[in-house]
Image 1 (tube, rainbow, N blue to C red):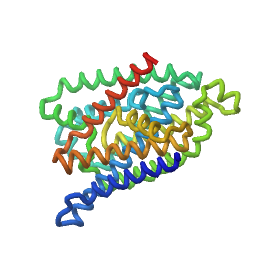
Image 2: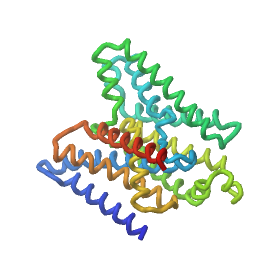
Image 3: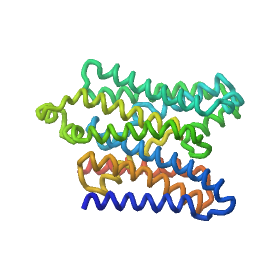
Image 4: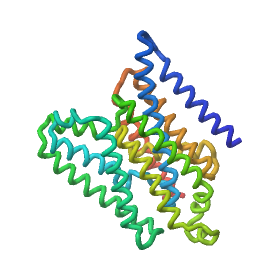
Length: 314
């Protein structure tokens, strides 16, 4: 039954892919299909990365309300964009080569996350509360610093920063996808390899240790995978804070099981389906270009509030 539900998710995603590629296709078909295929690959990769990363993050933090963005990924990305525009100017920022920019952003996001995890957890690798609180504080500091820097930008440069601070799938370079795809597949494969240990870790630190799982080492390894997945997705398209919460919650509700060998692919499929279906509706049916990220964040925020209220009344 569970595999059937995964099959239904896969079938729904395949239908969304077909509609996205071929709905309203006109000449020149080859050129249009190449553009759509590039955007589709970015949607699939970002949705899959964020969905899988959120499931693992919720497991190691033992909290189903959290997403990786809470430890400062989104704030650091906004700070990076602001710094680049401030130092290079609007014209210099627009002229940056996309591949080096993508690699630098990915390296900065991954490196900063690993430094944070290593610094906070070097004495107690199981203190996830300290990790989350430290990440929140650093996120606020980086947002404040970015806000201060934005105040000294001229209006045109400020508009560039604002545009770069929201997720967009337009103009993704195929070479960026060629770099990101193997990284995503390798991280996803490692995540599935860790799935049995994550099942045990979900029982709690004490239970995991009693069952022979080194909870601290597993948490650090999992956080490393989360850093890579979220860094690649954020550098590729931009921050989407609540997409992971939507994907993880809806994926878990769809399969109704707790094994990570099922939860991780279900969340990845759901995240990809949300982006592909949403982009199809707004771009093909409604003729809009930049609404999807705002809508995803809106519904993700509503889901977060609903989960908080449910926990309080439960």
